[in-house]
Image (cartoon, rainbow, N blue to C red; front, side, top):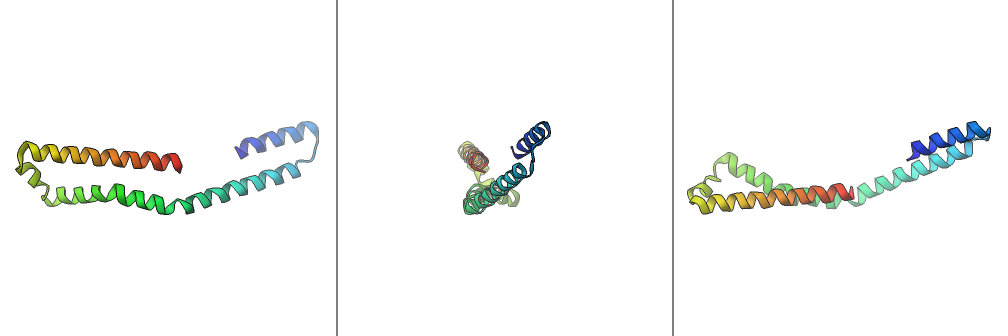
Length: 108
């Protein structure tokens, strides 16, 4: 947005012969303000992003550990019910992670 504004200010000042210093000062102030707001937004949402990472990623890490160590075999040992429960649980976890990612992207 600021780049478009700068280009417009250059064209306008070149076409009219006006001084562009005040326009560029205003653009610099605006860019500094937008950068400040972005930094503040990242700082204020850091705790929420970390919580989302832990809540969304923690169960996936546990599931991966169970699969790697072979402890998830207990689901297969319980037959169709165990396999179904494992697949439904994994599907719900992946859906939850997708929702967390969507929320983070929307508010980031």
